[in-house]
Image (cartoon, rainbow over all chains, first blue to last red):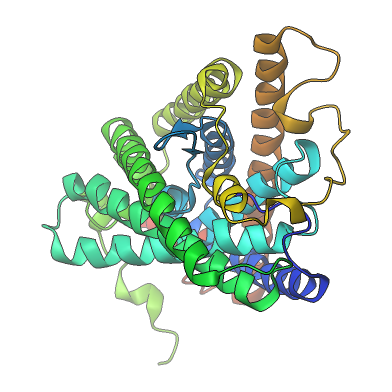
Length: 233
Length: 135
């Protein structure tokens, strides 16, 4: 869904750039609490993996393809803030080095594919985890559902942006229908890839999956002694 | 959450390094080799923009002449190699930037915690020491 240059007028592109900048800054702050020295390199790995899988376009229907966006995947693996940061890095590298996604559209692309997909993907993941049994084995399914939902929502957001500042005169309703339709299919791929990837990491190193950290038995559940938390008295 | 750092032991951190290496290997293989087999059809947005008459509003990319533009390496004519090299470079650069940013964030957060909290911290660094001395 990389938006090229020219789809949006200058005011919309600049405003989106500002919003994206604020969003990424918030992610950098929030990521402090999600990463420690041991897991920080994982943010690099997740970004590299998302970059790689984004190259793997899969066919959806005749003459159309789609690829992973990766926001939900990154959020479940390393946390929503760090995840949005990782996908933002992917988009930056793609726009600068690979001419994929316009430079003027970088803000819009960050909002659509890094911020919205992590917020929606992780939010739905949490909701689904609230319904499913509290087991590690529930995590891949919940992650996959979150990933599935995040893609059409990003497509709707694109149409919303287009209503504000699109450069061509189009039928918004027709474009919305087409965008949602094709991105429901792409979302299925997103969900499958996300569930398989999260499941694979859980099989090897469940302790490294952010979205499963409350579910692990033994020492991970040990509470901090309250004595370290009573500065008042 | 951050008390996790207290549970580090050398065996675990070695296994984390192995996991990182394994994951990078998978990413490099997917981008370097697997990408050749990806679908070349336009993606969802491109297709919709073509079908609904706004594809033509696209303007040329500012870095369209870059050596790796379009995931092809300039002057490498074997298409398998050209795409593979571009993918491998992309994985490396992305890993370096995102990993470096994450390390910087952690380091700054840690030094900020230490400066702010002094002796009775309940956060990361000091909490790790408390837990370590407790066990």
